[in-house]
Length: 558
Image (cartoon, rainbow, N blue to C red; front, side, top):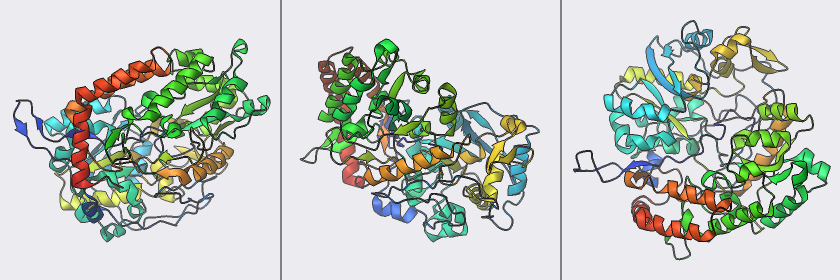
């Protein structure tokens, strides 16, 4: 996706450790569950006021169950409008902390940092930290009570932080400032959809700012090389798993070093669940016909998926490196045409991918299959959280400081196409970036200084935009997304910050390991049956009881 979104990293549920546990000394300690009932949630959520200051080339399209496509832009507006008027900050200075997956830019003499701070009328001391190890650094900060004034905490890092309890002790309650119509004094923040804010609500109060929010979050897609399909005379009109299997035979030519498939399962069934229609890892529960909670591991559908994938391996339709569970070179296999079909996150489909693919083959053309169901008929895709990252204000901040930072957050959330967005994302014109063919492009200095930092504190909703000059990719992705959102469904416990008991955190890894062995044909399906039985005995059945309690007390978020 040629998108300013989470690049496939953030479609994860905020499920974290808590509930009645034993502390380090072994004594009982009550915990906040983190969860909020529907009635309490409605009191905490901000009002939604769409911002129409910038018109997208391809406007957002509404789908099913609250899903909607991201607006798409083919070029930056020639005369970007301003979305913020008047003074922003009042000269305050604040420490921050954000993750960064990439090279950390210099803090001293950074024109980009200085440009944004001048624009906001305050000083945000940017302190990006290695995103790979970010979650490991947070527990010590929490324990020492040395948190910065404004911090980004990815939802997948909250499990180690006992967040259901910690959030009230560490962070400012934003409900009095943003709930309901109070947010209207911050128009750019008000333009973020209610779906974006939901997982920022803990124990009935709003604490978090949504980062790179979207109403079209799904785990990924099944991609194919259209140029290879055209050459082979193959049809991409796939409507069932039988159609996909037939392509395996048509497109595989092992003697020529070409295979139809790369791994189609994904880690912990991250992709194949949408085809075989069983719950995702983020929202793993469904119900049987009698209403009993059923975990994804217990479904018949995952068994069918495992059997089918192993069958494709045995048939020889899958690249040998994929069969060897080597995913490191997966993108290169797709770019080079060694595989014609793969599964990946939506962040894989963008202009940079097009640039890499056409470098390997000038005819390279990535497309995605329309959603389909294994058995044919109506397809469904599970809608992910509206945001997978949230930022928080330190509770020690004064009322005046919170109000200053809210004005700054509103500036940072200026929409794509605005004058403020250019400043926040590209810095100083002529120094950090130039406009090339109607789109901003970093200079050599900008490539050294500009990094995703301010955006991890506050930012607008995601937009699909041109990268590396590949405007057609934007059009293709927007068309696919418009079809996809028609099939969106909300899973059980959607958007609920369920503080899951820590003793169950180790249940998943043995199952992931068994999935790998069975899907690749290393072990028979009986190994999966044994693993599920062991999962139940080791805590799965008790975890079900825990979620029965959540369902009884708070509902299911649907």
